Structure formats: C-alpha cells, structure tokens
Amino acid sequence: MNNKGKILALIPALWTSLFDTIITIKGQSEEYWNGNLNMANEANPIGNFMMKNHVSGIFIICGIWLILIGVLGYYLPKKYARIFLLFVLIAHSFGAST
Image (cartoon, rainbow, N blue to C red):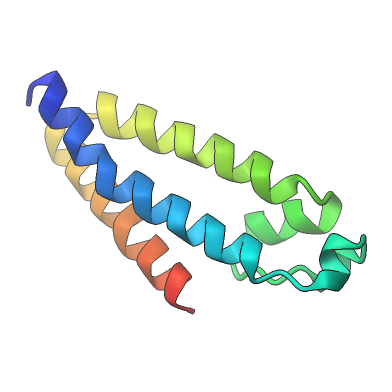
C-alpha cells in the first residue's frame, strides 16, 4: 500500500474516534464540568479513570489515542493495519451510539 493509500485508510478510524470523543465530551453533565469528577460518564475504564482524576483527562487520553491510531495504522503491515483500523472503527461506532 502506498503512502496515500495508508493515509486514506486512517480517515474512517480517526474520524469515528474523534466523533466518539466529541459525543463523550458533550454528554458530560454540568456538575462534571464544575468540578465533580465523580459524575464522569464514560464506559471505557481507561477513559473513565482519566476523567475521574482531572477534567482535562478526556482530552489527554483522546489525544494520545488519536496519535496511536495514526502511528499504528500507518506503520503496521497492511493486513494488521486493516484489522486494527476496522476494530477501531467498530469500537468507536458502538461507543458513540451508546
């Protein structure tokens, strides 16, 4: 797969992950944004842990995750990259829908 093909393959997974993040951020209650971190509403245990420790936790973990998707999706062999990117697309589509 050439460089353009690798970058194009990343778009659906990155977009879905970003969409899921936006829905998660918008879905937080006013109490959470006012400092009651126990009101975090996130099903992913890692995201939930980060959100309950600091208000910016969701932004940090999502930034790291988006970078990791890009790096792994670009540098993994074609077969593994497709499986990984499909997993990300399905997982974040489900996450955004719930």
